[in-house]
Length: 156
Image (tube, rainbow, N blue to C red; front, side):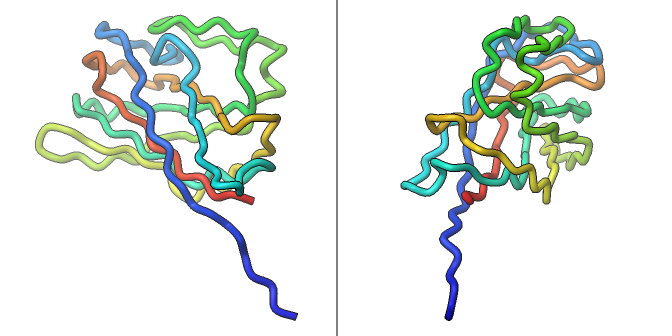
């Protein structure tokens, strides 16, 4: 018997609108949970694996960032841009995992941060949307649309 994989790889992009003041370590970057809508083509209804996170940084700040992933909307958590990120206890069980983006590649006036080979499994809790939050681990200053997040997802 031959088994074939029906896995499907996709990338999901989002650009949070962010504060232009300096962030402190532990501050949330963005004023709401980032919605990552998966285009499953009938393949992501049950779950998958978050494989990679790539962040483009037009300001070339190269600041270490944590990307916290949620399986459903973290509706009990208050999201305040440029303030300490405090996940509500009720939302902690929704956390899939955290990608620490510490590997930065600099170019002339911009940079790319990456965390590869994550293998963060998730099960869809209805719908086709994952949620994320970006947390500063430094003291960067960005323009309003300087960061873009790209998440690589492999379907189950």
